Amino acid sequence: MLDIKRDTMIADIIEQAPQAMPAFQAIGMHCMGCALASGETLEQACYAHEVDPDAFLEKLKAYLATV
Image (tube, rainbow, N blue to C red; front, top):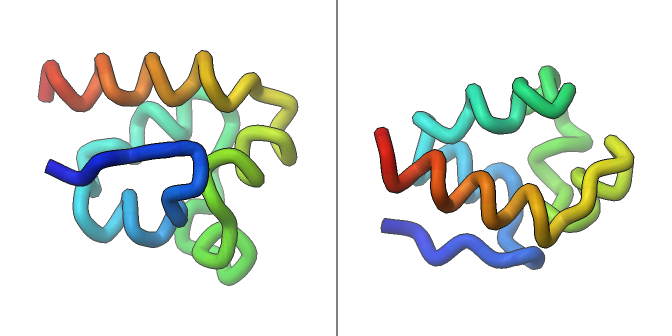
């Protein structure tokens, strides 16, 4: 499984763990395939969507552990 951190690229997460998409969509990140998203880190994407990156990272890891 991918070791996801704040500096992990969104594109890498989606490529290696596509089952993560619903977790991103749940916080308003619907454009996961767009060029901007593919060049952003998890931290950058969270800040762009006004989401705490540490809280989201914790929720994302918990979600991925269940799927």
